[in-house]
Length: 62
Image (cartoon, rainbow, N blue to C red; front, side, top):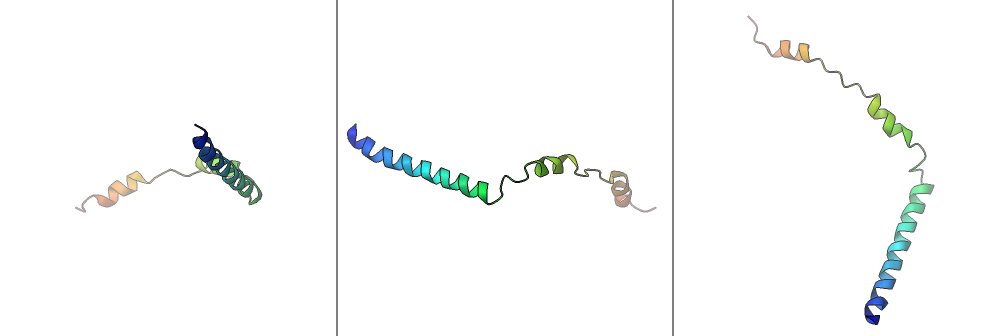
């Protein structure tokens, strides 16, 4: 039991430090500066297609 704690505690501390460093990097490199842009880009996307023109273009010419 004690030997497993001597192995798992340093490993878990390394994970906590790695997660902290990753979060610190993400915060100070500007990853969270503009969180609304990605959400709004989906809503403002132009999904209209020219289905009528596409169907007419594939029709054989008489």
